[in-house]
Each structure stands twice: as C-alpha cells, then as structure tokens.
Image (cartoon, rainbow over all chains, first blue to last red; front, side, top):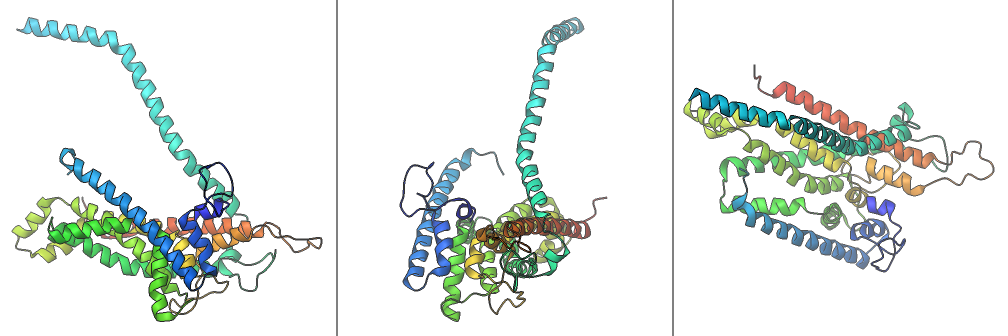
Length: 77
Length: 315
C-alpha cells in the first residue's frame, strides 16, 4: 500500500528504477485495480496474487534450507 | 615464589600502564560510536512521530473523533473519523478474538506436547509459510471465500476480520512459542513433583509465568495488523457512514480512511472560497494517522496493566 501511495504506476516494465511512471508492483496493482474489476478481471488479479505467493514461498523455503543447514553450528538453544 | 609473583605483577602493571592511554582513548571512541548509532536509530522514529503529531494536530480534536464523513464533500470544514475508528476497533477485535485462542493453543501444543514430532514440524513449517503471506494475498483469499456465500461484490466487516486473522495467527504462534520456551523446566518439574497433572501445570504455572511475554506478543501481533490497508480495502470496502454491524454492509477502517483521504488530494476551491479549505483532505489523513498511533499506544498501556495484574509477584 505504501508503494501504491508513492509510486506513479506504469503499464510496462523497465530496469530504469530512477524513471517515473514505468513500474508497478503486484500488490499495488491488485489494490489499485480490484475495486473496479468484475468477472474474469478478478480471476486475473487473483492469479497475480498466486504468483506473488509462490515467490514468497520459494524465498521462505530457500531461507529455511539455509537455516537448517547451519543449525548444527548454531549456539542458539 | 612470592618474589616471582610480585615480579609478574609488576610486569603486568607496567604493560597496562603503558597501554592505559590507548585503552582509554579506544573506550571513549567506542562509547561515542555506540551513542551515535543509537541516535541514528532514534532519528527516524522521532522525526516520524513529530511529523505525524504536528500535521495531525491541525484537524485532530473532539469533532474529528465524534463525526463521520456522511454528507461531507468538497472542501467543507467538517467531518471526522468516527466511522473509521469504530470499524478499526471492531474488525481488529474480531480478528484478535479468532487468532489469539488458536495461536496460543498451537504454541502450547508445539512447546508442551509436540516436541519434534512429525506433526509439530509440519505445523512449524506451515506457520512459517503463513508468516510470509503478503497481506494483499490474505485479502484476496478472504474475498474469494466470502464470494461463495455472498455472491460477487460482497463487502463485510467480518471479511476484513478474516483476512486480518489470517495475517495475525502466525505472528501470535511464533511469539507465544518463544515466550513459552523461556519458562524454565525446573518450574514444570517442581509442579509435577507435587502431583499436579500436566494440563493444570500448563494453566497455572507455565501460562502464569509467561503472561508478560504472551501479552507483549499478542499486542505486537495486533499492532502488526491494525495498520493493514490493502486487505481491508478489498474485503471491508469504503463507506462514509458509521456501521457497527460486522455482518452487514461495508465498514470503514482507519488505514483505509487515511488512504482514501490522501487519494482525494487537494480540493480545487475556485473563486468563491469562503467555506472551502483546499488542504482539508490531507489534513484529515494526517489526523487519522495520529489517531491510529494513539490507539496503538493506548493498547500498549492496557497490555502493561494486564501484565501488572496477572504476572506472579516475584517478591
């Protein structure tokens, strides 16, 4: 939501992170478009939400793998 | 023997005396560095509080707390956040009512009963996964579930509470689990030695000992979800009127109120600008942010009170 308030969104994608109006995040896109969507558009937004969830799941699993690999050497409990 | 020890001592003292200046200097430099780091960490916090307080106090007051936005439009010098405060309190309360019992019981299971069983490992894994759910996905989930019962376009306060409890449960589980692990095993063993059954030991000894930590954990979880905007915007919707029924109709909340006022931006007042305030929407957004911070602070103080009343007396 913070991104939605700050970023001026764009429709394409670009690697120039200092340019305005050329980027959008999944969360901000869903929040901006959801109130005016019906039918298939809602399904599209939920699909982008699924993509976001898969990304966080992969990051979480990688982090867990790293932590459990180092657990034997950790001094904690 | 005594002569060698005196000689050693003299040598050590000479060494220390030679280094004394350098050691003092290092000590002073390090102290200064640590204070500097502390100041750096506090600067954003103070700056944020000051900005919110100074901008928010423009419109904050009894009127702001007691009027809704019904029939307020343009640059009118009226309106407040009463509907949003009611909604935030009700939705957060409903979310806490759902997720605190579940979270606390899961934490008790993980610490007291399920030590490293397959089920406990699976639960820990899925709690970790739930911690990583983006808030917008929780909102989408609540909408997708309630659309089955209410048809497309349904917006209810309880949907917002469902989305928030989904975000809150893993936080409650993790913090309560850590707090229960801190209770020393000797206390449990002493209780068993007196013939107290396990469930009574948990209720009377483990929970009582860790009540301060548990309260802090629950309050942290509440503070985490009370400022969530995206799931509430999707699940509870927007309204200008007071709605105290979680199961009927749209419900305003403070973060959504702030976002909505900010989005409306400055008012184009035109020539006849007698009653028209150009910056009234932004001022309302700041006052809403101040209200939200005050609610969190008051909840924190209530938590301290609970801790003081229920924690075992140590002296």
